[in-house]
Length: 219
Image (cartoon, helix red, strand yellow):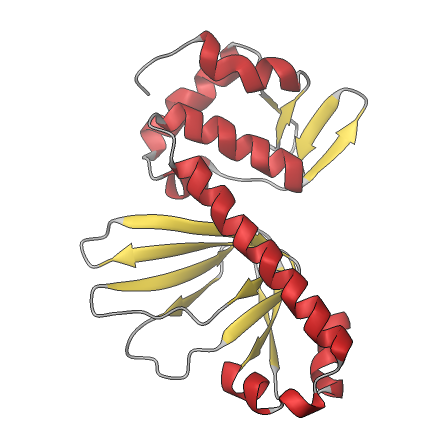
């Protein structure tokens, strides 16, 4: 309710939306009313998709993060995909700037804090994709998900939601076939295993972190 109260108190028009898992929002050049978004609850990832169907993942965002109005061109568009049930608030950046005199200090402080946290999410994704080998991208991605979205029970650290191999392939810029090989390798080496509800689990984070250095292959 924090963000809704901020917008109400600051007299800024807004709308709320619900995305179910795998639902998406698409920003294209033909849509002139694209809005900025704040995640109220949930997790999404943002794809930049080019006309030749090449794509790049820009960030994985969570509650409180801000999606500044992406600017599609004739060569690309943007897609925001929910990894789990997600609620968002949409607003016009113009309304935000024009209503500055009504905006409370707490709103400004929270917004700047969220904006900084969002930038860190983009930097994290850049670090994941900077790895040459897909296997190392997958390992880094899993570590980030465990850091940001996990539960701990005894020695088991579990990603708190199911993430499919297709989604991992999209995020890491690979194919499902390659991801399947990497996941099988990680399971065989006991670096990870799957829970009964198909969530990724690790019980030796130190071995998992070092795994990419133990076996260097071409995946």
